[in-house]
Amino acid sequence: HELWGWIMIAHSQSDDGRAQDSGDFCTWLSTGRETLRKGDRTRIDLLIASGQFLGEHPLERLTVAAICQSAGVAHGTFYLYFKDRNDLAGTVLGAFVDYVQIQMRTAARNGGDATRNTTQAYMRVFEANPVLMKSLVAGGDTFPEARAAFHRLNHDWIEAVVGHAMRTGRGQGRSKPDLMRRAYALGGMVDQYLTALFVTEDPWVRDLSQDRTEVLDMLTDLWKRGMAS
Image: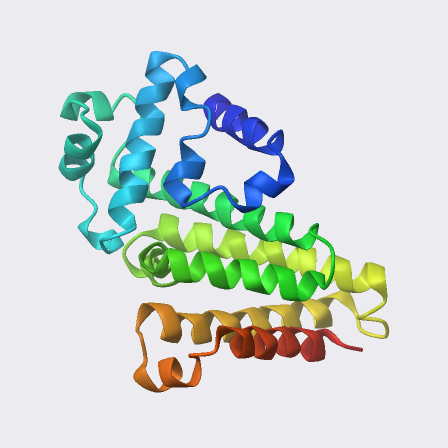
């Protein structure tokens, strides 16, 4: 969409350090809103209202009526911008995927250990947005759009991880398909652990994870060992 392309350009032109500390997802989403035309502002307002709703409620409770009320938009106006709640859910979760990727890519450019930095950024996003992350990880049963957004997040990031491993020689001696399989398996392990810690709040995992630095060290080590040649 033309509007979404403009938003991504606005963010790409932001200062890298500021992007990393840009606040929550909805704050990031509202960047540049005041410079848009009225119709585009309405679309963004619906997305922001949806992001706020999904930050507190499960995906299956998302309704057009609730979002219109939150955004201060007439029910009929909603359909000028989105076909239905599935279209809205797919768009806002797609935006959230972009937000997650930007946080991780910015972290990778901050200097030092790129694997540790990106893992830390992902942990922070997961901890700050547990309900939204649950919508991505587990929302596909009811919303195929959520499944598609999560698959894109996984695929795009795994391509980046494997590309880095091949460029740096870390994956030397292994084929790209082998590295891709490893990255998918490792990513699944990380998602399962962080889901248990931040979403389902498994008491045993929580007790084992009180020291976040130790958790970060462990997850970083898993990535490095798993992708090593």
